[in-house]
Length: 67
Image (cartoon, rainbow, N blue to C red; front, top):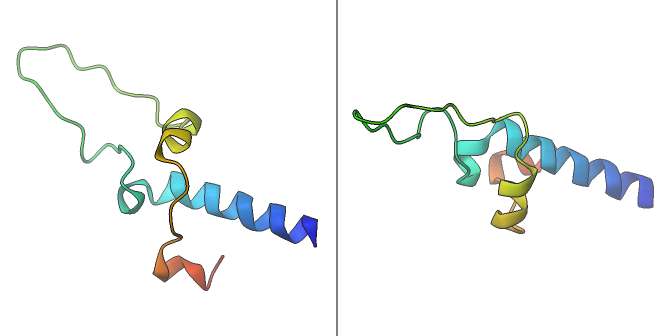
């Protein structure tokens, strides 16, 4: 069913926003900090470009049953 497939795809995309660290995406806990530079907080609300660059990746084993 195409509708179920789209729902599953949306759920996987949402999981990349919520579990960014586990997917290897940038997150607030792994941002480099330089003492002499002015820090600019990245916009974590829109990760579409970063997720696109990451490409396809396996769904986390722990989430596979839920998704």
